[in-house]
Amino acid sequence: MKRITSLILILSMGTAMVYCQTDANEPIEITETEKPTVKPVGLIAEDNFESGTWNNFWVRDWRQCCEYSAQFQSDVVRSGQYAVRFELDYLDGQYQIINGTKNNGTRSSANFGDYERYGKIGTEEWYGLSTYLEPPYDPDPCGELIFQWHGQADYDLGEGSLSPPLALYLEDGEYVVKLRHTDKRVATNNDLVVQKLFVEPYVAGQWVDWIFHMKWDYKGSGNGFVEVWKNGVQVVDYQGPNCYNDLNNLFWTMGVYKWPWKTCQTGEDFPACCAENGRPYDDCNSNVTNRVMYVDNFKVAGAGATLEDMKLD
Ligand SMILES: [Ca+2]
Ligand SMILES: [Ca+2]
Image 1 (spheres, rainbow, N blue to C red):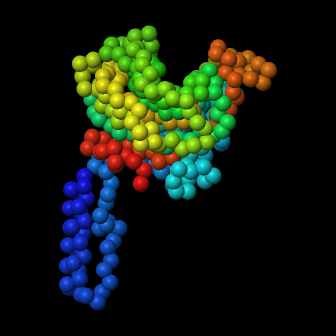
Image 2: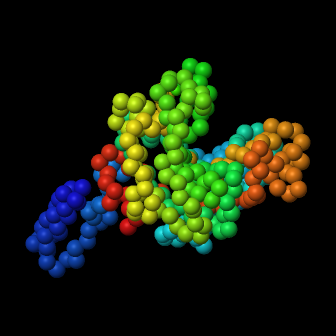
Image 3: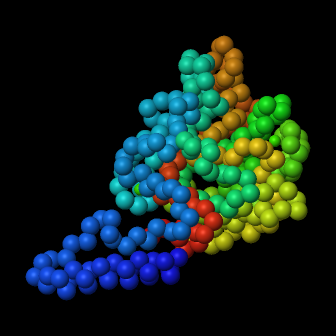
Protein backbone atom coordinates (compact mmCIF):
# COMPACT_ATOMS: atom_id res chain seq x y z
CA MET A 1 0.00 0.00 0.00
CA LYS A 2 2.84 2.36 0.86
CA ARG A 3 4.27 1.86 -2.62
CA ILE A 4 0.96 2.82 -4.23
CA THR A 5 0.57 5.86 -1.97
CA SER A 6 4.12 7.00 -2.81
CA LEU A 7 3.42 6.59 -6.51
CA ILE A 8 0.31 8.74 -6.25
CA LEU A 9 2.28 11.37 -4.33
CA ILE A 10 5.02 11.43 -6.97
CA LEU A 11 2.47 11.69 -9.78
CA SER A 12 0.67 14.53 -7.98
CA MET A 13 3.94 16.37 -7.44
CA GLY A 14 4.81 15.90 -11.10
CA THR A 15 1.53 17.49 -12.13
CA ALA A 16 2.15 20.40 -9.77
CA MET A 17 5.64 20.96 -11.21
CA VAL A 18 4.28 21.14 -14.74
CA TYR A 19 1.91 23.89 -13.66
CA CYS A 20 4.83 25.73 -12.00
CA GLN A 21 6.82 25.76 -15.21
CA THR A 22 3.97 26.97 -17.40
CA ASP A 23 2.96 29.91 -15.24
CA ALA A 24 5.01 30.66 -12.14
CA ASN A 25 2.75 33.55 -11.10
CA GLU A 26 -0.45 31.55 -10.89
CA PRO A 27 -1.21 29.90 -7.52
CA ILE A 28 -1.30 26.16 -7.82
CA GLU A 29 -4.64 24.67 -7.02
CA ILE A 30 -5.06 20.97 -6.65
CA THR A 31 -8.68 19.98 -6.75
CA GLU A 32 -10.23 17.44 -4.43
CA THR A 33 -10.02 14.69 -7.03
CA GLU A 34 -6.32 15.33 -7.71
CA LYS A 35 -5.27 15.09 -4.08
CA PRO A 36 -3.44 11.90 -3.20
CA THR A 37 -5.73 9.41 -1.54
CA VAL A 38 -4.59 7.24 1.33
CA LYS A 39 -7.54 4.89 1.52
CA PRO A 40 -6.40 1.39 2.36
CA VAL A 41 -6.26 -1.18 -0.36
CA GLY A 42 -9.34 -3.34 -0.02
CA LEU A 43 -11.38 -0.77 1.88
CA ILE A 44 -15.02 -1.51 1.16
CA ALA A 45 -16.84 0.97 3.32
CA GLU A 46 -16.54 3.13 6.38
CA ASP A 47 -18.86 5.28 8.43
CA ASN A 48 -17.72 7.57 11.23
CA PHE A 49 -21.35 8.73 11.52
CA GLU A 50 -20.30 12.32 10.90
CA SER A 51 -23.23 12.88 8.56
CA GLY A 52 -25.43 12.78 11.66
CA THR A 53 -27.95 10.54 9.94
CA TRP A 54 -28.30 7.00 8.63
CA ASN A 55 -27.08 6.54 5.08
CA ASN A 56 -28.09 3.84 2.62
CA PHE A 57 -25.35 1.62 3.92
CA TRP A 58 -27.55 0.62 6.86
CA VAL A 59 -30.90 -1.09 7.32
CA ARG A 60 -32.91 -0.41 10.47
CA ASP A 61 -36.64 -1.07 9.90
CA TRP A 62 -37.78 -3.66 12.41
CA ARG A 63 -34.50 -3.59 14.34
CA GLN A 64 -35.41 -0.35 16.12
CA CYS A 65 -38.74 0.11 17.81
CA CYS A 66 -38.67 3.75 18.94
CA GLU A 67 -37.15 7.20 18.59
CA TYR A 68 -34.70 6.51 21.39
CA SER A 69 -33.58 3.14 19.96
CA ALA A 70 -30.75 4.61 17.88
CA GLN A 71 -29.73 8.24 17.80
CA PHE A 72 -26.86 10.32 16.49
CA GLN A 73 -25.44 12.37 19.35
CA SER A 74 -22.35 14.38 20.29
CA ASP A 75 -22.00 13.79 24.02
CA VAL A 76 -20.09 10.52 23.73
CA VAL A 77 -17.89 10.24 20.63
CA ARG A 78 -14.71 8.40 19.77
CA SER A 79 -13.81 10.85 17.02
CA GLY A 80 -15.38 13.79 15.23
CA GLN A 81 -18.76 15.19 16.24
CA TYR A 82 -21.08 12.22 16.14
CA ALA A 83 -21.43 8.65 17.29
CA VAL A 84 -24.50 6.39 17.36
CA ARG A 85 -26.25 5.71 20.66
CA PHE A 86 -28.23 2.47 20.92
CA GLU A 87 -30.74 2.02 23.73
CA LEU A 88 -32.85 -1.02 24.54
CA ASP A 89 -35.49 -1.21 27.25
CA TYR A 90 -36.85 -4.50 28.49
CA LEU A 91 -40.37 -3.45 27.54
CA ASP A 92 -39.44 -2.67 23.92
CA GLY A 93 -40.62 -6.12 22.92
CA GLN A 94 -44.23 -4.96 23.22
CA TYR A 95 -43.83 -3.20 19.88
CA GLN A 96 -43.48 -6.52 18.17
CA ILE A 97 -47.02 -7.30 19.21
CA ILE A 98 -48.33 -3.84 18.43
CA ASN A 99 -46.58 -3.45 15.07
CA GLY A 100 -46.13 -6.95 13.78
CA THR A 101 -42.45 -7.67 13.25
CA LYS A 102 -41.16 -4.30 14.44
CA ASN A 103 -38.28 -4.67 16.91
CA ASN A 104 -38.26 -8.39 16.33
CA GLY A 105 -36.40 -10.05 19.17
CA THR A 106 -35.87 -7.14 21.56
CA ARG A 107 -33.04 -5.44 19.81
CA SER A 108 -31.86 -1.97 18.94
CA SER A 109 -29.52 -2.41 16.04
CA ALA A 110 -28.60 -1.67 12.43
CA ASN A 111 -27.32 -4.05 9.79
CA PHE A 112 -25.76 -3.93 6.34
CA GLY A 113 -28.06 -2.93 3.56
CA ASP A 114 -26.31 -5.04 0.93
CA TYR A 115 -26.04 -8.68 1.91
CA GLU A 116 -24.48 -9.60 -1.42
CA ARG A 117 -21.36 -7.56 -0.92
CA TYR A 118 -20.06 -8.65 2.47
CA GLY A 119 -19.39 -11.85 4.38
CA LYS A 120 -18.89 -14.07 1.36
CA ILE A 121 -17.78 -17.51 2.44
CA GLY A 122 -14.23 -18.19 1.21
CA THR A 123 -13.16 -14.55 1.33
CA GLU A 124 -10.98 -12.55 3.69
CA GLU A 125 -12.38 -9.54 5.55
CA TRP A 126 -11.43 -6.91 8.12
CA TYR A 127 -13.90 -5.11 10.40
CA GLY A 128 -13.08 -2.27 12.77
CA LEU A 129 -15.27 -0.31 15.15
CA SER A 130 -15.22 1.43 18.51
CA THR A 131 -17.75 0.61 21.24
CA TYR A 132 -18.64 2.26 24.55
CA LEU A 133 -20.86 0.81 27.28
CA GLU A 134 -22.77 3.48 29.16
CA PRO A 135 -22.32 3.18 32.95
CA PRO A 136 -23.38 1.57 35.11
CA TYR A 137 -23.87 -1.34 32.67
CA ASP A 138 -24.25 -3.72 35.60
CA PRO A 139 -23.33 -7.38 35.04
CA ASP A 140 -26.31 -9.52 34.04
CA PRO A 141 -26.41 -13.32 33.94
CA CYS A 142 -28.75 -13.03 30.94
CA GLY A 143 -26.52 -12.38 27.97
CA GLU A 144 -26.71 -9.91 25.14
CA LEU A 145 -24.52 -9.19 22.14
CA ILE A 146 -23.40 -5.86 20.69
CA PHE A 147 -22.18 -6.89 17.24
CA GLN A 148 -22.33 -10.08 15.22
CA TRP A 149 -21.86 -11.80 11.91
CA HIS A 150 -25.03 -13.74 11.22
CA GLY A 151 -25.47 -16.51 8.69
CA GLN A 152 -28.26 -16.74 6.15
CA ALA A 153 -29.66 -20.23 6.59
CA ASP A 154 -30.48 -22.50 3.65
CA TYR A 155 -34.20 -22.00 4.14
CA ASP A 156 -35.03 -23.66 0.81
CA LEU A 157 -33.44 -26.87 2.14
CA GLY A 158 -35.46 -26.69 5.33
CA GLU A 159 -32.76 -25.18 7.51
CA GLY A 160 -33.87 -22.76 10.20
CA SER A 161 -32.13 -19.62 11.40
CA LEU A 162 -29.17 -20.40 13.68
CA SER A 163 -27.27 -18.51 16.35
CA PRO A 164 -24.54 -16.26 14.91
CA PRO A 165 -21.24 -17.94 13.98
CA LEU A 166 -19.22 -15.02 15.36
CA ALA A 167 -20.26 -12.32 17.82
CA LEU A 168 -19.17 -10.18 20.73
CA TYR A 169 -21.29 -11.08 23.76
CA LEU A 170 -21.59 -9.50 27.17
CA GLU A 171 -22.11 -12.24 29.73
CA ASP A 172 -22.24 -11.62 33.47
CA GLY A 173 -19.79 -8.71 33.36
CA GLU A 174 -17.46 -10.11 30.71
CA TYR A 175 -16.72 -9.65 27.03
CA VAL A 176 -16.98 -12.97 25.24
CA VAL A 177 -15.97 -13.44 21.61
CA LYS A 178 -17.94 -16.56 20.73
CA LEU A 179 -17.42 -18.71 17.66
CA ARG A 180 -19.73 -21.38 16.27
CA HIS A 181 -19.20 -23.56 13.23
CA THR A 182 -20.43 -26.61 11.39
CA ASP A 183 -19.85 -28.13 7.96
CA LYS A 184 -23.31 -29.72 7.94
CA ARG A 185 -25.36 -28.25 5.09
CA VAL A 186 -28.66 -28.40 6.94
CA ALA A 187 -27.85 -27.81 10.58
CA THR A 188 -29.60 -27.06 13.83
CA ASN A 189 -28.15 -25.24 16.82
CA ASN A 190 -27.41 -28.67 18.33
CA ASP A 191 -24.94 -29.38 15.50
CA LEU A 192 -22.81 -26.31 16.17
CA VAL A 193 -19.36 -26.53 17.70
CA VAL A 194 -19.13 -23.60 20.13
CA GLN A 195 -15.93 -21.98 21.38
CA LYS A 196 -15.14 -18.91 23.43
CA LEU A 197 -12.15 -17.27 21.73
CA PHE A 198 -11.77 -14.42 24.22
CA VAL A 199 -13.13 -13.72 27.70
CA GLU A 200 -12.30 -10.64 29.75
CA PRO A 201 -14.19 -8.48 32.27
CA TYR A 202 -15.60 -5.40 30.59
CA VAL A 203 -15.25 -1.84 31.89
CA ALA A 204 -18.11 0.58 31.26
CA GLY A 205 -17.48 4.22 30.43
CA GLN A 206 -14.48 3.65 28.15
CA TRP A 207 -14.11 3.44 24.40
CA VAL A 208 -12.77 0.15 23.09
CA ASP A 209 -11.33 -0.18 19.58
CA TRP A 210 -12.00 -3.59 18.03
CA ILE A 211 -10.42 -4.99 14.88
CA PHE A 212 -11.53 -8.36 13.54
CA HIS A 213 -9.73 -10.12 10.67
CA MET A 214 -11.04 -13.37 9.31
CA LYS A 215 -11.21 -15.67 6.35
CA TRP A 216 -14.61 -17.29 6.25
CA ASP A 217 -14.43 -21.07 5.90
CA TYR A 218 -16.64 -23.78 7.36
CA LYS A 219 -14.40 -26.74 6.47
CA GLY A 220 -12.14 -28.32 9.07
CA SER A 221 -9.52 -28.81 6.36
CA GLY A 222 -9.94 -25.26 5.04
CA ASN A 223 -8.13 -21.97 5.52
CA GLY A 224 -10.42 -20.29 8.02
CA PHE A 225 -9.07 -18.04 10.74
CA VAL A 226 -10.13 -15.32 13.17
CA GLU A 227 -7.79 -12.65 14.56
CA VAL A 228 -8.96 -10.01 17.01
CA TRP A 229 -7.26 -6.90 18.37
CA LYS A 230 -8.66 -5.00 21.36
CA ASN A 231 -7.22 -1.51 21.77
CA GLY A 232 -4.29 -2.47 19.53
CA VAL A 233 -3.42 -5.67 21.43
CA GLN A 234 -4.04 -8.99 19.71
CA VAL A 235 -6.32 -11.11 21.89
CA VAL A 236 -7.40 -13.84 19.44
CA ASP A 237 -5.30 -15.87 17.00
CA TYR A 238 -7.53 -18.75 15.91
CA GLN A 239 -7.10 -21.00 12.92
CA GLY A 240 -9.90 -23.31 11.85
CA PRO A 241 -13.48 -23.32 10.67
CA ASN A 242 -15.47 -20.21 11.60
CA CYS A 243 -18.89 -20.27 9.92
CA TYR A 244 -21.69 -22.46 8.56
CA ASN A 245 -22.14 -24.38 5.34
CA ASP A 246 -24.54 -21.91 3.71
CA LEU A 247 -25.10 -20.85 0.13
CA ASN A 248 -25.50 -17.17 1.00
CA ASN A 249 -23.21 -14.67 2.69
CA LEU A 250 -22.94 -13.73 6.31
CA PHE A 251 -24.19 -10.29 7.26
CA TRP A 252 -23.23 -7.78 9.93
CA THR A 253 -25.32 -6.16 12.63
CA MET A 254 -24.36 -3.83 15.48
CA GLY A 255 -26.32 -2.61 18.50
CA VAL A 256 -27.88 -4.22 21.57
CA TYR A 257 -29.60 -7.55 21.02
CA LYS A 258 -30.87 -9.09 24.26
CA TRP A 259 -32.89 -12.16 23.43
CA PRO A 260 -33.75 -13.20 27.03
CA TRP A 261 -36.14 -10.25 27.13
CA LYS A 262 -38.31 -11.68 24.39
CA THR A 263 -39.71 -14.47 26.56
CA CYS A 264 -43.23 -13.10 26.52
CA GLN A 265 -43.30 -11.45 23.14
CA THR A 266 -45.80 -13.84 21.69
CA GLY A 267 -48.19 -13.55 24.62
CA GLU A 268 -51.30 -11.44 24.34
CA ASP A 269 -51.09 -10.18 27.88
CA PHE A 270 -47.88 -8.24 27.39
CA PRO A 271 -46.47 -6.42 29.30
CA ALA A 272 -48.04 -8.05 32.34
CA CYS A 273 -46.45 -11.40 31.59
CA CYS A 274 -43.09 -9.87 30.79
CA ALA A 275 -42.67 -7.75 33.90
CA GLU A 276 -42.64 -9.06 37.40
CA ASN A 277 -42.22 -6.62 40.24
CA GLY A 278 -40.85 -4.08 37.79
CA ARG A 279 -38.18 -6.40 36.43
CA PRO A 280 -37.95 -8.51 33.30
CA TYR A 281 -39.55 -11.90 33.65
CA ASP A 282 -37.48 -14.43 31.77
CA ASP A 283 -35.86 -17.80 32.12
CA CYS A 284 -32.51 -16.54 33.38
CA ASN A 285 -33.60 -13.84 35.83
CA SER A 286 -32.19 -10.77 34.15
CA ASN A 287 -31.32 -8.19 36.78
CA VAL A 288 -31.21 -5.10 34.56
CA THR A 289 -34.00 -3.33 32.67
CA ASN A 290 -32.14 -1.08 30.24
CA ARG A 291 -28.95 -1.10 28.15
CA VAL A 292 -27.21 1.79 26.39
CA MET A 293 -24.11 1.52 24.22
CA TYR A 294 -22.40 3.63 21.56
CA VAL A 295 -20.64 2.87 18.27
CA ASP A 296 -18.22 5.02 16.29
CA ASN A 297 -15.65 4.58 13.50
CA PHE A 298 -17.01 1.61 11.63
CA LYS A 299 -14.79 0.32 8.84
CA VAL A 300 -14.79 -2.80 6.68
CA ALA A 301 -12.11 -3.95 4.26
CA GLY A 302 -11.28 -6.98 2.19
CA ALA A 303 -8.13 -8.86 1.25
CA GLY A 304 -5.15 -6.57 0.76
CA ALA A 305 -5.84 -4.37 3.77
CA THR A 306 -3.43 -4.42 6.71
CA LEU A 307 -3.72 -3.99 10.45
CA GLU A 308 -2.34 -0.47 10.07
CA ASP A 309 -5.09 0.37 7.58
CA MET A 310 -7.72 -0.62 10.10
CA LYS A 311 -6.39 1.43 13.03
CA LEU A 312 -7.89 4.79 13.87
CA ASP A 313 -6.03 7.78 12.43
CA1 LIG B 1 -17.65 9.95 14.78
CA1 LIG C 1 -26.62 -24.37 5.85
